[in-house]
Length: 254
Image (cartoon, rainbow, N blue to C red):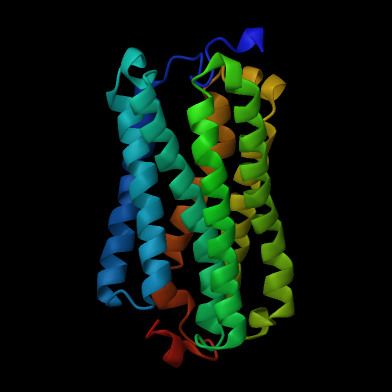
């Protein structure tokens, strides 16, 4: 662990113009999401709020990345805040994927309740593990414990992104969905799966050292998939992609 003297802070200098440009793109998607959600009166409510949170957290993280100096970013408070924003953004997209299934099913059915409770428990458990991992990362004597906790936390998220597919298949919601809904969930789930794999891989010390030296790894495997997912949600907004599903008239009250 001697080579991890800069952990958990990255070793690269942030590209301010790149962060400014991509934050603007997320801002455009955010505006589009809000406008369409207002038009739909924020129904169905849960996915509207979850994707709104995802937009806001990722947008704020990018703004901070562009606005703060390297010295400020590499402080405990700033780094923790930015890490939490990225983590929340990733998890809310995953939760939105699961919740979308319940919008197609009868919202008060046992299956829907199981999907909601199960996905929430997974996200909460992962977050509980990540909290002490972040605290332990600032103490050289507990860095190894920090990595183990991160690996456990990110493994749960990866499992959630993989389990989504058998849940989608065995609930047979795909039979009730419009083509737009299927496209939306396929792209969004693939994007979250890519991010989950990347985050798990970087929770291994040797891999962390490699990616922490170059910012482009963050943009390629963490930001880009999340941005694609958010833009897909905005373009195929639930007010459009849920229209025509078998239970659309009943789920809009969710």
